[in-house]
Amino acid sequence: MRHLSVFLALALFGCGAGAPVRGTLLGPEIPAAPVPRTPQITLAVPSVIDERPDDEHEGSSVRTRLFIFFGVGVHIRREGNFLTNDFTVGPDAIKELRGLAIQHLTAGQVAKKVVATGAADFELRLVAEHVYGTHFAANKQTVVVLSSKQSTDAFVDVQSHNYAAYGNVTLRAQLVDKRGAGAGNVVWTEHVTGYAQRPAGEQRILEVQNAVQLATADALATLTQRVGATLDRLGVGPSGAPMVLASGSALPATFAIERMSRYRDFLERVFVDTSTGRVLRHEVMPAPDRYSSRPGDWVLSRVTAEGLHLSGDGYEAFARALAARYDLRRVDDVTHYHFFGVRGAT
Image (cartoon, rainbow, N blue to C red; front, side):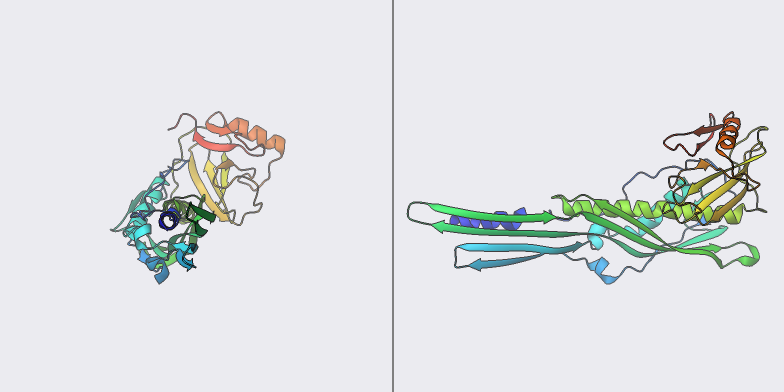
């Protein structure tokens, strides 16, 4: 039976994913805003409220079942869903979430200043409804030892399947106007989600932790885009103080750049005064064509400030005129010129 104990030990410890290590939400590098700008409002981000359900705090593990038959064989079955707990996500996850939100919003240049506490024009209130990672595992092993006086033979049957790891984050966000007579009014509210997938592998818990980091980054990137669009619309608008995009001289009087949202559910269109490089108007509208351009990329709009849709030749001529000052490139899109700001600007 010595061989049985050896195989049993291998079966029990060989099908695990390693001991969990303390998790953290800190992970991917935070990208800077692709279009430099100087907004005129300030934003505060108070402490994030934790409303995660109990099972995301307690977690769950893959269950192991052991069956010994006739004293010469063992069948082991590990099957079930692993769900992160407070330790594997990170004991400081909610504090880290707030810090990462401030970093993302700052890098995205959504406000002149983003602070944790203190007076500000707007306040962004965040509620963490879900922050967790999960994977499903199915491992079956059967060990049979056949003994005789001359030899000991062992038979081992192993069936294993590891599923991909997933990270999920759901935030409820509210933007509160703290200015003047409208102080305390909620001007925008939305659920923002983040999602990530990591490949199946032996280091399953580590992959789950990585997936949670990526899902957090995904949610905060979406949050930054939507909060930025809302603040631009409120702070710039038709009557608001303009934001400086770049200095310039006379070219076509105005032009528009636009980008599709990350999930293709709305379109941002920004009208720029070409001679001064100032934003004249910022619009957020339902996406008229959900596949007109790649999500998240600023492109030169085919719509003029007067609402005219440029023909192919007209669009080419307009782009060539603007190219004397602004960096416009085809990149991987034959229908649009991508906008990279002022030529020579850092």
